[in-house]
Image (cartoon, rainbow, N blue to C red; front, top):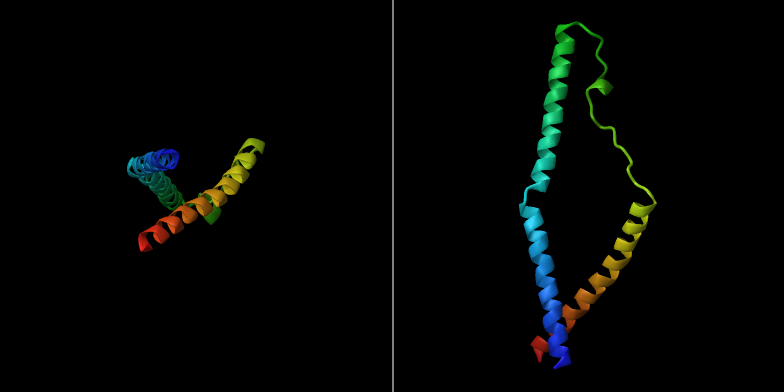
Length: 107
């Protein structure tokens, strides 16, 4: 009974994680980030067109928004390394569970 309860708990947690990721994916966060990039691009195009109309000197670096800011700190670095560490073992665990399930299905 303990194994059955443990497996049931494991699959319930796995299902909850799946539903959470699914909801976050479909909530539109990625599309919102793309929309912000398009708005920035449109603003840069308008700035470029105004500079051309006003016969200003044009430098391409004034219109590209390729500057990236590094917001990392000690906490985010530790969190990232912990995430990488745990994801490696979670992946091994999930592959092991599916290997066992595959063996049980063959018998």
